[in-house]
Image 1 (spheres, rainbow, N blue to C red):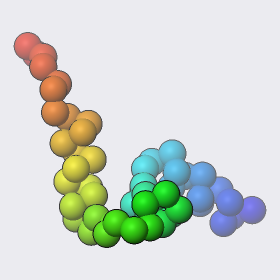
Image 2 (cartoon, rainbow, N blue to C red; image 1 turned 90 degrees about the vertical axis):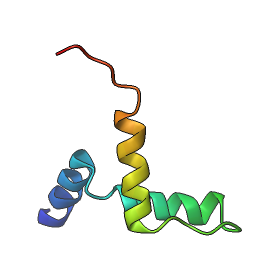
Image 3 (cartoon, rainbow, N blue to C red; image 1 turned 90 degrees about the horizontal axis):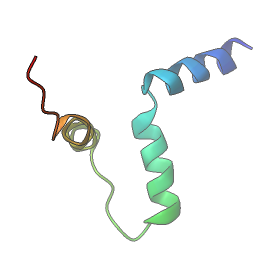
Image 4 (cartoon, rainbow, N blue to C red; image 1 turned 180 degrees about the vertical axis):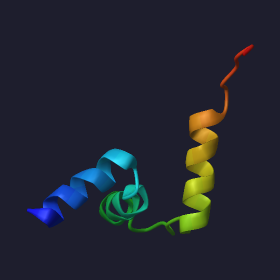
Length: 56
């Protein structure tokens, strides 16, 4: 029960995003090289925040 709760918390917080990316990559893009953890998180930050335009 504790393990399942921990997995849910990690999923909701995005802490397991890189592990999920690697699973997806292995299943769908096995012939390509996966991004490093550092590059993955850099691209995720760019995806989230690029284009955010606010005045305040």
